[in-house]
Image (cartoon, rainbow, N blue to C red; front, side, top):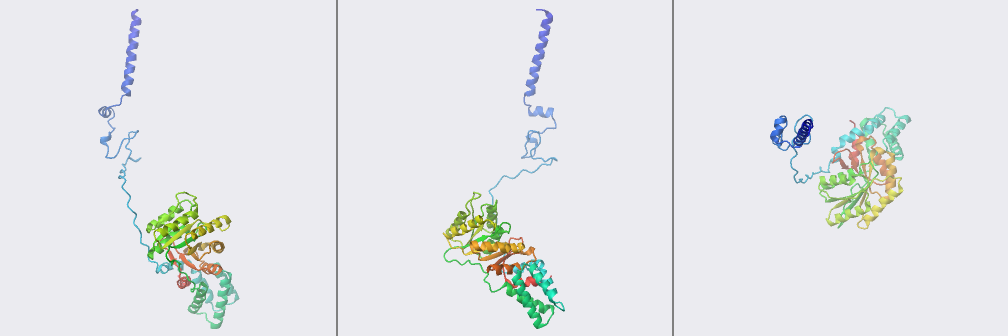
Length: 395
């Protein structure tokens, strides 16, 4: 073999062996000692704070973008039972919330008294008084009755003394609110739980009202079961369950969204009978009064419940800010499920306290509870005298 060819072959062989060795060494994982020697800024697991580990980028997985180490989460422990709240006593709630009512309804305390206390009250003033009452959602017939009664008394007594005028207005308005109506909840069922259905359109605070009413009943030492029969609104059952859990009240619900609400209501009544509860309250889906099929379904819920037990109360939840539209809702619901009482919510956000009179007059059904705020215990039994006092109180 030619010597030049041999030398060339040897050189190529040396180069090939060198390349193979280079790649073999490069692909071998470095030992900790070699790593520290080659990359002195790199730390291994033993150099990191306890609980931290190296990720694929060579950074501590517990570190933030700024390099601050976030403390690792403690090992998950068995969740403790949530503390059960003690609701505020029911007695005196309306008095406690009176300041809110006074603040929001001074249309009576200021506007009417100012008009009635003028030296001369002519027809124009009486028209203005009537308009003020209509703006307060008193309703046409009640407003005319109140104006006529006040006209007669002011004419006979011939007084414009503010205190006397206020007394006359208080007396006539109290008559319209009607303190003789029975506003107690019918919860005295014999040998079985009392059954309460709660109905109303979406957005009036119906599920929240059921939760708050559960607190009212717990404060009165009653054993309560809740039924989440609003199976169409997302998270309605979860919301009601949370309200119940806060005061130690169980909730019957379906894990299937869109389940038959009548079935859930029936199971809730069964459960209440089984545990010998005092009251079972069934929350129903919000029904639009112009959706006949949905209203029919609400009637079905009531009929199915009645296969197991009589329905003792049907409470219609209305938003006080809806005015005359609330009256239309009340009429339709009453035709479908025979409403026995009204719960008026959001009364603290409106000057339209006259809606109480208008609703009672149209339905012949009393307002039994009013909501005056967002707090868990801001639901109070309606008291006619205290309500009128607050309406006519000046700030």
